[in-house]
Image (cartoon, rainbow, N blue to C red; front, side):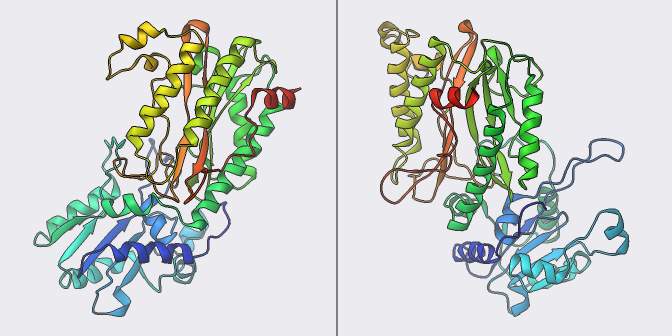
Amino acid sequence: MKYLPIDSKLFVKNRVKFVAKMKSNSLALFNSNDIYPVSADSTLPFAQHRDIFYLSGVDQEESVLIIYPDAPKEEHKEMLFLKETNEHIAVWEGEKLTKEMAFTTSGIKSVFWLQDMDKVLFEIMTQAENVYINTNEHYRANVETETREARFIKKLKEDYPGHTYLRSQPILQRLRSIKEPEEIALIQQACDITEKGFKRILGYVKPGVWEHEIEAEFTHEFIRNRANGFAYTPIIASGNNANVLHYIENNKECKDGDIILMDVGAAYANYSSDMTRMIPVNGKFTARQKDVYNAVLRVKDAAASMLKPGTLWAEYHIEVGKLMTQELVSLGLITEDDIKNEDPKWPAYKKYFMHGTSHHMGLDTHDYGVLTEPMQAGMVFTVEPGIYIPDEGFGIRIEDDYVIQEQGEPFNLMAGIPITAEEIEELMK
């Protein structure tokens, strides 16, 4: 891993929180992700399942975590099962975790090799009444590939059909949505790396640059600062490309007079950042571009101020919609008649601002969180309003990441990243 070691106290703390929510005489199992094939002998880079990482810090394939707090044997209360390393693996793939390294990483004393798992699992399954399995229940999940976790759960139920199976997701959705101070620091690190990438771009962009060249500049700055890479597929969208919300081709030339939407974020130690900024290709916004830009910025700032404990996500988005409606009227994009005749299920402002304003962020860019429950201190949300005007050849979105505080305004993790049109123009000179 490129990132610096994380103190195992974070993962110990996370397991303690999870155990506190478990029913008595229950065990919970968590698997690493697969390494996914491309074709022939090619594979995609390994990306660890965020749940096993959250609970153990282990960032390695073919790993299993079992938590059984009521186990009769002390050595079975917390266990890691890892792929046993050997000289051949060390030569061809590099060093894997030893038992000692796994303890340093996770704080878990009982570390076994995977070949011992069936025997240990049989012993503890004869003792436990309930089993927590870890299915993907994220509200945006659309999984077509059978994962390692899914295969494991299927076999477990076949081998042990008499147990009561429970879901770990309701616990994790709530625990992971409220960040520990150590997690906030890691997200801040990801945001700081994103800031370095953005400032690098400001001195690079000019007419004739291609979108993929900008992506390459971000890649260079991210990797040299120990990032995992991009937290998500980057969007570098110049001109009318900005009106395609998930534009990822990044293969067009940036033309004089256009503005570029850059929705990018570095990941550090598997924690995400999520930034969107707009810059003019020639270093100067037109009057119209600046008017729309400032309207979006006003909505972003006002929306951020609503991120407080007790706020309901659905009501928050209704209020943001009202703010955006007034800005669109001022810009001449919608009229009072449009508002009067709007469909309540698809308000008039949705013609130009069709996506949501905020989502949880953390180990996943669209992180865990129960959207029907009130916001709480320690949650991290993006704020990303936008106005998209295909008829005028540009779209604008601005995005920062915020931590909700017990009292007062939320803390902006991206406060150091230039954001006003005037700042950006000055830095691009």
